[in-house]
Image (cartoon, rainbow, N blue to C red; front, side):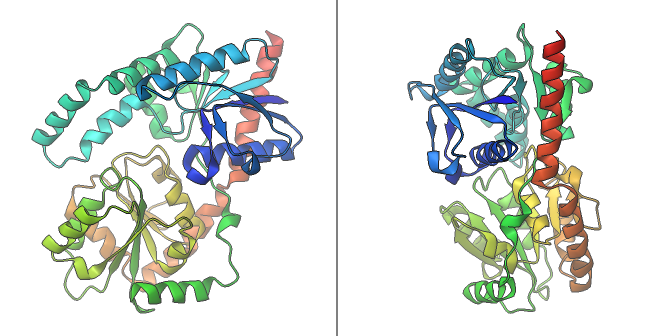
Length: 389
């Protein structure tokens, strides 16, 4: 097939959708498909050599108009092309398939308010968003994407996001395909994993017997770090559990919270890690009490490393778990008692041993290859439908 991928920036070193698009391009090229990339920026060395590049120039400012400009320029660039299938990611329209890996903006806006613990603060934040031109721009663009005259085939990465399409835009569930996010588990294979674990724990000043919960995120507020620190404050003093935080380098606010809640001695703030694999190897389970994640990749990475997972019902990746065998799903990240109970549950080494085996089994059931084949079937079905028309 001749396949066009449309995304403004494909610099895989930045992670997220950009890494995913590079992985997808490589896998498509491996199967002999012709891959065309329509983008403003890309890293040639991180993409397959056979990729056909099409530069889509857009002004950088103002930021909130950039997606409109990219989408419009992309449509013009595709007008005279003869691709079997075109796929848009995030804030664009006009392609055959839209795969919004970041979920719906409308749902994200609502869930972003949940991170505030009280209704007064949520109301103030909602008013601030109402006055933000970027929020209005993204909301209008999303309606243009999914409620326009020529509607795309929508692929989403969780059933949670599919429900959001019905809730916010009235798009029936049968019109939205679910293909969960996935990772390449081979990235987390290491012959010297035990040594890496020991070396990393020494850097953390943690003994081999102490249980360690791992938290990995860049957006600490949205992903629930403050409620997690509060839950640690509820743990009994004799509970030896430690917390390791990896992600954004600006941690001062959360260090002060840890001091205020009396848990500073339990927490290690590592800042940014370009490659967090050793952190997965050295930890015992992942805790990700997020307020919004369409389908969190850190959950999949943790499972691939044999780590049980604690996450929230606001994470589409929770659909891949089979609680309590390989993890636990909490209802409300602000419920410190519920979160603390989950932490205590996986502080038990016997529980963790069984859960680690289950986590690896769960990870083996859904890999990038499973994801790719499911996506390819959708592309082939769409091509046949278009040819028949």
